[in-house]
Image 1: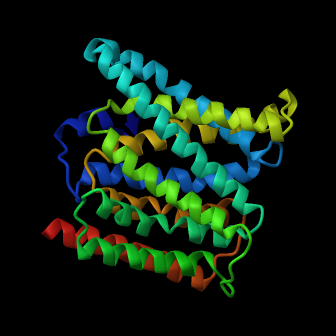
Image 2: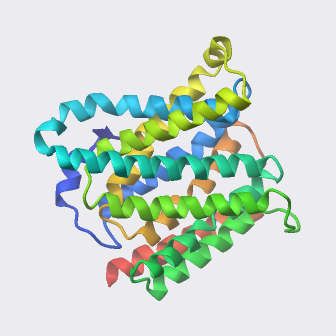
Length: 307
């Protein structure tokens, strides 16, 4: 698997578990960038199809895109049947958490602004270390400092007026909890599961559940799917097939609290994508938010590397 000329399969064997790891950090930055620009694709795609239809098709497409690579790696020859059964259980749980998080976020966005939804979703940079404390992870003051600074930057990036709680904000906060659960769950599963089969199976579960929901609440036609083809291809092949898989692989080697800080930078890439491709306004307040989020990451990354 090559991304920007980097063979990820050659990086993986030499990496070691820890907060600071160059190869894994590169994967997380690529994930955040792809996810951020996926907001632009999703906006374009949902002009023709509903959100659950969009998620269902793109997650199934992402799952299917991994099958040739899994076959090439001869997965069946390297794992026992018992481990395959565990992968099915892990993928089912991860896919269910992924689906619930995406559904709660989408439902909440009906009743609140996109900026507030982005900020409240970003609370998972705090929720990830909080969950980590309860499951015995060591969270240093450095990680807490970086997470809080990144969250402050997220506020300046997404909130341009007074912050008032609205009807959908609780749903968005619940979705942030499930995103945090997903980060921690992946951190546990990658210790005992192969990354690619785990990714493919969780995508398939999320896609099936999303299409089942779409069949009840949305209208699905071949014509509208064809009109949304290019956004679906980006969302399926890049945002799901590549980016989510990079997340799974990278979290084998990076502390989940630090991973959540880098992944939250998807909001910055989303703003940049809207500015570059949709000609949205980028204010000085937005730029200050970007710099604060970057500062939070740099504090952990530079100080962590020295330590």
